[in-house]
Each structure stands twice: as structure tokens, then as C-alpha cells.
Image (tube, rainbow, N blue to C red):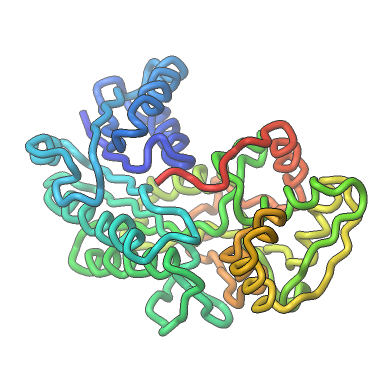
Length: 363
């Protein structure tokens, strides 16, 4: 019998990871999911569906709690769980580019520290899987490898900064002997086969803007669209890669970029979205600073465009993300990141049929 502890359930990635875990666990095992109180009902519904689909997998136990509390809000249950936990998957975070610094520090940094404290006291722990982000790079100019972290970089926003400090803590504990594996996804979009997603952000802002026009869609373009690249990965690749890498015998102490090794330029990405939406695209060069300032200061413009000012920075982002460790450890698995152009139509079709999906994910 073994126990696995998961945060971020029933979130976008957490649910699919639990589904994968059910496929490689036994009925006597238990997957313990830490769930915020206001997501409890949704989590219970997800568990019912997962058990119906995987009757031979592990049991799923829900624990109402909060990573921002030192005891995770579990009280005495915390120490009761620790002896049986062999793996921890830490997904929970604030995935919001506009997050305040105080909230980002509380959830992303303190929450990660509390999870690492919990894991360090699990005597049978084999692995602590931490989900970071490629954007701990901030606006580092050039190639940001999996072996890099503290490079004196500036950040686009408090989301990036607080995820950076959280990974600093995770890497510090790694050096102290906690068996940590770190995964850095790029911009995560929906499933490449179904288009399913839990939120519309990143390239979705442009897709939805295009769909509001009948034939010709004017699209503001910042920076050099032939030089800058937007690194996008579909959810199924992220989960497939994590599932495989989490079982790799040499994964402890590794940092993996879950990124597209051949990302399109911004111009290529916009063209792909234009074809998928059936719109002729008129790309209009504009200053990034001017566009951000206009969106920040002119409420009616921001409401009409429906593109947050925080998202502009990613269309002239200077860092690139090679995935050497990831590709080496996925060799022979058949798992690879598909090209954005091969599944953008699926994403657009999902947007058309699901217009009411939120623009912010779960906390």
C-alpha cells in the first residue's frame, strides 16, 4: 500500500494528473487530495466520475485544507498522513498574471514552503513533484536553460516573481536532501485532441478578439513579431510528460522544461490563429508601452478589447526555453510537444462552442 498527496485538485492539471495516477495504482493505495473548502463540492463530483472510470485504481480521499497554513489546515490529520505518503504532487498556486504581490507571496511562496515542510517529515517520501513555470526566467534576454534560475532577472509581474521565489525555496530544499523534481511548463492551453480547457488566457485573448470580427481582424503587434516567440504547450502534453518523467529513475534533482522545442514566432502564431478562425488578419505595429498604458488607464478600451495589459509582455518576451533534460528523459516514450499549428483549430473550435469559460483559473 502506498499513499500519494496532491494539491491543486480539482484544478486544470491536477484532475488529469490524478486520472493518470489512478491508471498506475492499486485498489489498496490512496490518493490524498488537499481541497479548498469552496471547491469541495466540485471535487466530490470529480472523484465520483474518476472512480466510475477507473474502478481498479486507488481510492481518492479528499481533505479540506489550505496550503497557506503551516499545518495545511489539517490539524492532527497532518501527522497521521505523513508516514504513508510516498509521493507529493504540488500543483496549487495562483495562476494569475495580475495577482498582487502579497497574495502571490502567501499562496505561491508560503504555500510551497509549507508543502515542502510537510514532505520533509514524510519518512517514506520517494519524490516531491513541484510545478513551477518557465517564466521564473522573468525577462532574461536569451536562452534560459533548465539549469538556470538565479540570473538577476527582472520580472513582468508578481506572478512570475513569486513563482521564482517558490522555486528558489524548492531548489534550496533539493540541495538539503528532499527528493524534489521540478517541472516548468510554458504557457499551457487546452487539450490538443479535444480543446478542453478551464480558462481562457494567453493566446486565447487573440483568438477571441479575432472571432469578434466578421472577416478582417485587426491585431496589434508589439516588438518584432519575426524575432519573438510565444512558447505554448497543450495540457495533454504537460500531463503525459509529467506522468512519464515522474517515474524516471533519474528524475530526483532534475528540472524539466515542459516547453515546445520549436515554438512559432509571434507572426507565425497570429497567422495560424487567423487561419483557424477564418479571419484575414491585419497586423498593426504598436508600442508595447503605449498599448499597456492605454489598457491600464482607459477602462472602456480594456473592456472592449478584453485583453489584460499584463498579457502584452508575452508577445515580445525575450527568453527562450530549451528542454534538453526533458527530451533526454522522454526519449523512447513517444511523448513530444505537438506544433501549435497542428492543434490550433481544435482550440478555436472549443472556444466557439464554449464561450463562457472563465479567463482566470482556480486558486
